[in-house]
Image (cartoon, rainbow, N blue to C red; front, side, top):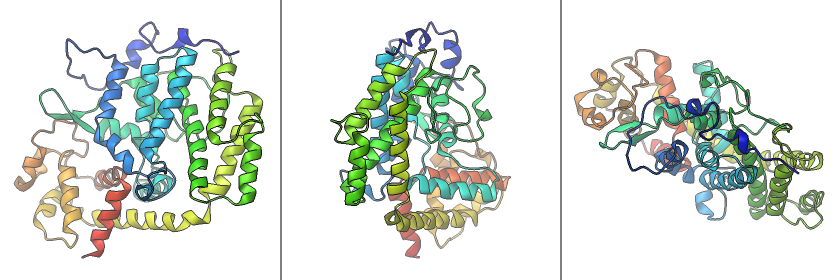
Length: 410
């Protein structure tokens, strides 16, 4: 049987609690606030626009808006929160931190799912020499891009706790591991150079990482079956895999349940978070099945090509608008062919630039914004390119499509 992790939970008695609850910028306080630092993070994410946009971002299957029963990114996040909360409660970990990491873990996803992520990474490598990956972009967004109004109605950065930010950047579940445990050093998160490079600094973050894999593997199979992706032979193969460890297992929901129970029974502080060998093998087999039968399916190829086209065209138009510190003045004054895209991008860009480079016609759009001005004066073209990538990464599938279709009207 698994052991209790209560002594290692990220609560006030944890030796590194002050560091885990540290924020980049102080938040306004209320004397009658009933929330812990991590619950406060949860509600800050819940009220953010980035969280709301996930309802129109692809999980795996494109254009889910036309099918109410296909998982979107926001539903996936809810599944991860549900699974990770059950595990954290059973193991005696901090449920509030677990929930906060879970709800925030995919805020960095680009439009069009992993294909959008790959396209932005190609652009980033081509122009900036660094890859784009959603775990690091998630921390970038909660640190620098996403904004909330404070108690005086001014927009400021989210300023989440170290533990939640760490859980976001370390949640990659693509690397197959068993027996994971937190890293010991609470270093600056800029040290992460690739997805999965380091484990989370908390057991709660490690739980979310595993819950993410359980959730996406199970739900992706369910959606693919609903959409008719599987042949009769593949359906038979799935049934055989489902019953490999439990002859009564008939669907992926039962498999996910069995994995949660298995993890809780086999994990301990000494062994780490781990599945039994048989259940770990089953998880690996299901993941392999998903890649072969879903993610590489030929039905997804037109969607992948379309998403690359949409993102590339939007980026190329924005790139041509760069004029150094005069960029915003030209955007405000020049009659561009793609006027709507440029105008919307300029209004968004102003929030993150120094006031002295913002033309009077756009000044009113930044009056309540007291966030960090991460793009400065736009004197460096690479900073502008990063801004364009950030803008596209924040789009929903729907907004990116609408933007692209308006380009065709010119």
